[in-house]
Length: 209
Ligand code: GRF
Image (cartoon, rainbow, N blue to C red; front, side, top):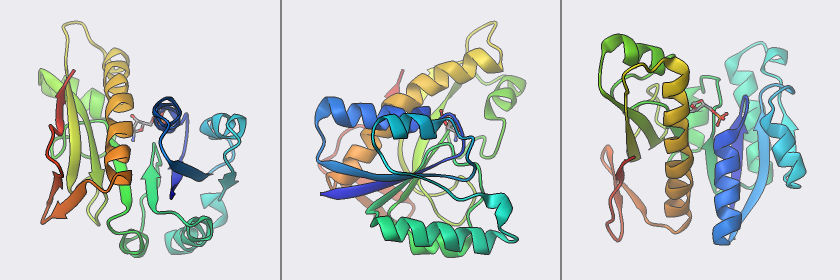
């Protein structure tokens, strides 16, 4: 059975969506652990309630990113992760960390990459006046929000939206596509070809919600 380790920094609603989908669909998977970079991450409560082992590695206790990432790698490897899921993990990871987990490290970004990488995507989308927004699940490479795209979902930007209403609509889309992408990985259906991810057998990797 494959094992997932999830990294969170906050609410952990994407992690929760993945666990709940796995339970509903009876996936053969082990949630080996959840690691947060500070003890106040709310998502840890959900993990504990589910009996999933939780760990906190305080980034503030590490003088360098390299030392923090080395501690993360050691914990993840000790848990035996086949897949590392970044779910609202708000730390920039070092190239060494990314290389260590290459091909088994995924992230969700609240925008239609390659548009709007980085932070504050909803505010920036509203400011730019674009009419379509969404979320992207991707493998992580050394660029920020750049790796091969596994799937995307679009949602409309509606008249009268503010960053809060738009974020909520995008989050609903995130909760649908992140579990799908994780399941595809677990089923061995994803192949990275150059900077693209092919799904075998093919199925749409793009959702209009
Ligand atoms: C999500 O919008 C995710 O795309 C972004 O941070 C947020 C995390 O939310 N990277 P949650 O912690 O999963 O609820």
